[in-house]
Amino acid sequence: MASCECSIAFNCKALPFVEGCVHGSRPCRDVCLWHDRKLRICDELEAIADQLPRVDRLKCLLTANALVPLLRMSHSCEEQHVFPAFASGASGGERAASINRLRAEHIEDEDAAQDLTDALLTVGYREAVANPEALGFMLRAFFCASRRHVAFEREHILPFIAQRN
Image (cartoon, rainbow, N blue to C red; front, side, top):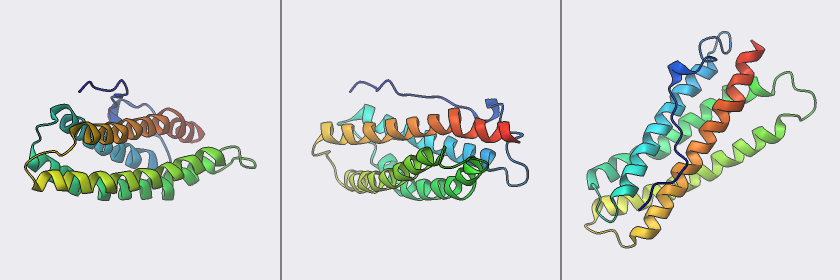
């Protein structure tokens, strides 16, 4: 299977806004670390997709068990710390639409992650992948969307917060 054209590489330390982001709670640094973890799991998912129809069952099990908890913790950090910092000082709802869209993406991502977890657990405990094309599509759809979400937050949300402080 061909790799999608959505790979986005980031390094928290290379992002200029991280150090001076928000005084006190450091939500940009924290969310940047969560982003790095999400991007690493996207790399794991891509590796699984690239090897289909063969799979490393242990990698499927480990990735499946990490995926949903990682997203829930990451999304909680963003929603509790980053989104309020992004919304503060905005008149009316000028940034509300972006925040609402990102919150909706969080819900969609967690639902997709649960479906993906179920599929990876099934593959991890069985010998063959029943439908490699479907699983590959599911994996690629998830990790491409996750990478785009991270890219948007890093390119638009976090620099805005850093600029305000």
